[in-house]
Length: 113
Length: 114
Image (cartoon, rainbow over all chains, first blue to last red; front, side, top):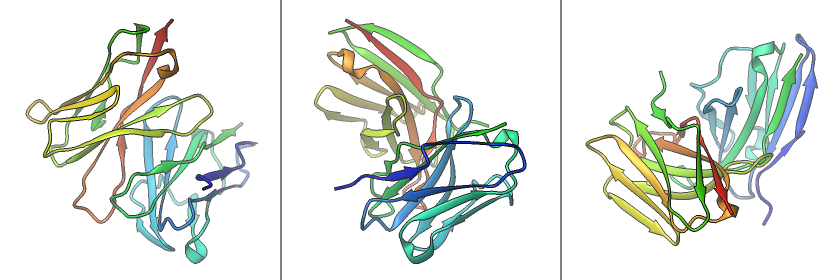
């Protein structure tokens, strides 16, 4: 069974540009989470989808971040326009049920120059 | 403010000895705790968890202890192996909510010396 897949694995963009990250959860997992780790600090929650609905987006930093999960399958996280402080590693995780173990992808390392 | 704290950024242990990783939390509403292990360039991998109704959970070489009154948990690895060298994250959540977002600590880098 394939795990959580994220791409690209690394993205380097300039300040002001737009970047879209993609996450493919484990097949059959209704719950999809986005997290971010900035500069070796803690991994911080961004938002939680249940199927295509946003269950909790309390961790989204500001309105430059837009997450979607059309059809309840894969999800995208768009940053527009990107700022220097957006640099970090963005992780996606999925779980079969809300209380289930969250399985993480390898992450996308975003570098904003 | 950080609700989950791992005050030791790193720990070095000899192969075969015990590794003890510590974690403190401040929010008494947390009722489920997890440990994740992370190798470089990989995502965190679930290791072991414990519910607040227990004070100990064991899985092979890994044991997690929970002290609710002290708001403290620890992960014991016995015996430690070189392959255990990784960053270990402590995480906490509230099972009763509509979401199961994890609140992570900053991680502890464990180095097991052969």
